Image (cartoon, rainbow, N blue to C red; front, side, top):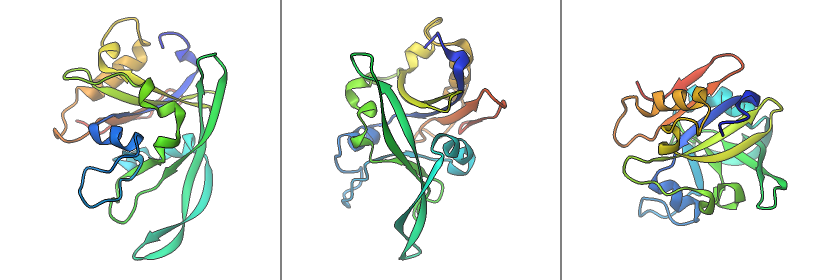
Length: 198
């Protein structure tokens, strides 16, 4: 990713944690209460919602339970793009759901197990000192390309554009609770940025 960063408009990123892997495989969630939501959750939703709406620009009404009753709720949709092994460009509709009553600060990419570009076959293995991050990279033509990145590659000179690596590492190295996944974004078009650390 050292080349082509000049075409990048903005990047939204999230640390992949153990619970995320279970969701990709459509396994149960961390609690013993059932359910097993198959999604990637993004905390700090009020701070990232404007970027989410740029990446998922279409609005769809779906019935969801809110306040104990089923009501029409706005869901955001967009297209994920990726290349297959033969180099062909593929795309699929993706959905981002706004917070629920129970999780008022968490939005989520829904049904991640149905997205080939989010497969764990494409994901590097995380380890102590080498976390893995999901990057949603939106180009200037508005297409969104998901990528997985290892922390070690971000810290290795020349593998990523310095503007990307430095911004992400600044957030990765910020102080936060030990149980809090790294979440942030930066927008090259207007200079906006967010990091959930301090």
